[in-house]
Amino acid sequence: MREESTGYVYIMASASKVIYIGSTTDIEHRVHEHKNGLLGTFTKKYQCHRLVYYEELEDIEDARLREIEIKKWRREKKIDLINKLNPVWADLSLTLFRS
Image 1 (spheres, rainbow, N blue to C red):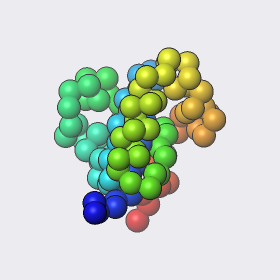
Image 2 (cartoon, rainbow, N blue to C red):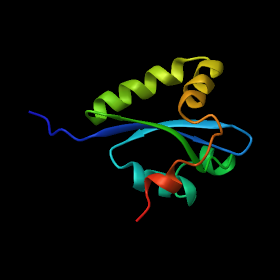
Image 3 (cartoon, rainbow, N blue to C red):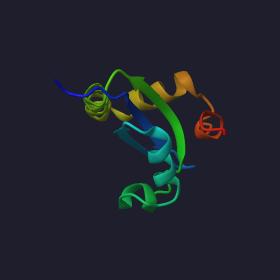
């Protein structure tokens, strides 16, 4: 039996609305890595430092499948997904991770 771990699919964005989609079991830590340039070159190069969308799923496998699903969509559909939750593209991490 596999160990269950909550999963998250998330979208990071730049000020010019370049987006990056990923999944993780620890969204707070992953967002910290993106914001501080500790991960791959895409988010660093395009300055995708704002968490503009996320979903919590039952486990990481569900999150990975949702990530793959969203990545297959046309850009317009991805933008609509963000706009439904966060029409001003605010950085959700500023309120999500308050200590």
